Length: 555
Image 1 (tube, rainbow, N blue to C red):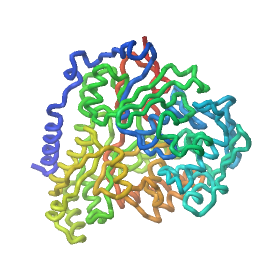
Image 2: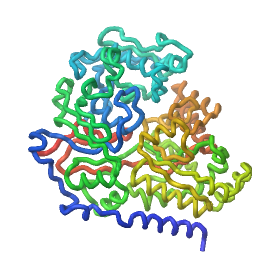
Image 3: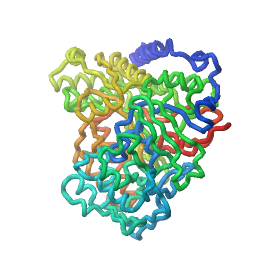
């Protein structure tokens, strides 16, 4: 009997034990699983209030300080950038009425719409945008996402203390005209202006009150909705912004979001008719809904990768052979087929499917698979790596290393499967620890972990949205990967408009990253979510959570 068969059977047994006791969509409530009853009118005053769950407490609702989907889903409904995604999921002008691009593709001139206003009635001006982008780059603010503004000429120099604020090439020419000059032509710059770090903030409000984003009473935004209630770790309430220029296309009167980390509790609320949409659906439920061909289940396209960080500051994870052994022992096909079960694809690198190369074909296919599953080879490689570090497998197992993940039934099941694969194939014991999402993020930033669950949803439709994560100066480089050759390849890709050169540089960069293996890609995301049958108008953009801005609820 082969070792691979034994590993597979061991993991399937673990998975079966995990699924035992998980309630099915049909047996968690007295009503059928396809119930679509609305919230009683007396609870909403006859208004159309879309109800759902945000899954984690936002760290900040200031666009410059946000860093994840637990914040962006809210921000994308209360703010709007120069460009935005419309009710068809297409990139269109938002706060900008029009734009012009210079012949050398370096200078963008945006003209704002007439009459656009902040939720407090102030006019949205070009000066607000200039202030916002320079503020996000201000090293004193220490914005995690400042590097996404490095495309602007002088942005990186200012943020890294090598240049001044005045050298950042974004300027309000007048109240309605914003001029931006880039470091080099960037094909996806328009799309970047629809990303939340580029969302404007009200200059007068921010300057007069540094804590403006912490309370609904002082929170000022410019999007289709506004924040009216924030019960920390409990609830967020958004209300339609009647001052929004496109208010006639907004059918909802408001959006109510609970903040519940437990997936099963959130699912029970959805199944019981309390939610209209649920994004974070337990994996066991997704599998059952798929088997039943449930019409409420949507498998949304997602440009994203689920992976594990491996902390190189902690011995023996500083050894590339140890990191590669951990990767080679992961049976990713078993994970996507038997655990996630939402159409996910076993990872072949860090760049997911859905992004095109210079020929218009999948970038992923042009690179090929950079991931190997070889449990026997992994065991030999682990022993070599440990020997180089003066450590035995027994010493490794007794070191109490743990895999850190944020509280979620899905993350737990995947972590338990990985734990079992490593135990069976490599003979090592790794513990598990779950914490709240924001706590996990904070611990990763401080290096307080050995292995940690991570994931990345693309910010824009280009391979650079992944590869830039591990640039040596990236604030999201939680493994502190530092490879000058890798940085040089990224710089080359960013400094040319020659698509052949750009893509080849990124292909080389990804191969280099996977040779060093600072992270262990697990699978490429899809986004399973459920929507009640009386809800329409929800769209899925591959680099966004489901867009609920233009949703409608049938009477």
